Length: 487
Ligand SMILES: [Fe+2]
Ligand SMILES: [Fe+2]
Image (tube, rainbow, N blue to C red; front, side, top):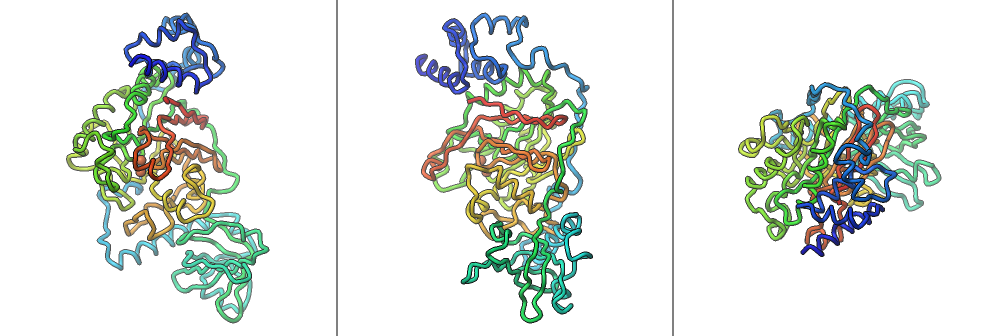
């Protein structure tokens, strides 16, 4: 038993490229939870540290030595008053109107088109592009007799001609046309998805419905946008896909993360914690799911999560959002956990919809579980589960979290399309694919936030390898993203 634990400890140390002296190793092994202890030490270790002795650890515990990055560098600047609110109009909870009637879909797509058209009209690159002047409807563009025009349309159909040119049928509220992209055009290598909304500058044919594209624009995040530092010194930690109740829930790594937060969150001003969905493993989510469950009672799963969250330091404000494993409707936007599930949590825990936008200390945080990544990977060439941040970037480009309708990710036809990214966020969080990645796209900190579940039999049979036990922490002032590893 001890030999196995020693191996796990040595494995964790080797992955971090740090050496423990024999006496340091002995000290770690004498702890009641050696893996948690060593992970806590490793997570907080100064980046330059390579060799750690017992004396180093003891000096650090006594407060005499800067072994941990946070020891003497950080002094809390902020008072402990949290500044977090759900952005108005972004939470569907209690506002759902759809009944699934055909007319609901008509209203839904009209709203999507109108919201994305508005964003495209705010895209300065599109509006400045030739021909000068405003956007016109597809019908009017063709009525004007072959003059260059600027149109906005929703992608209805895509195909390729025998000669290798791209044909994209787009429609607006009045008409439809076929946008032609010649195979020699730089636009020919661009990726288009069904149901996305694009702006096209080009020339309509005098006969037929062809619109020869000169330039194509996406709603996108404004070009040239950058992260502007603020004086906030607070940080947000993200724990996605906890999957409490799963047979492969990573309890030891979770405990190490909790220990680390207890030791560091206050001094490091990690004042907010977001759980972007799949907070429990749920029941009956995929064929044979019950074989992967330790806890088959879903109420018990939420009670257990609530118990775990009580361990989070009191000063941290917690937000819980559902995902496709949670006990709400599967169609997005998903409302917040309600009823008896909501009662499991302390009143301090904020339960929101999926997706939702949060305002935290002046920053706009968009948090979305990320189920649509399944469709991006299945339907869009070049996308893969190994690179979830790329799919998230493409969502920002299209200013839509799940543009493709009718694939794996179910969408509820609400009167308002809650999946449109109305405001370009400062931080964009997703999970779902159990990967750990981040990038900066035009000043947006794009973060895919790992998982706390090891590989399940189901994932193994689908050749899927997760990257669990990583807690991203984003600083709201500097925008710096740290991926804290507890593996
Ligand atoms: Fe998940
Ligand atoms: Fe998920």
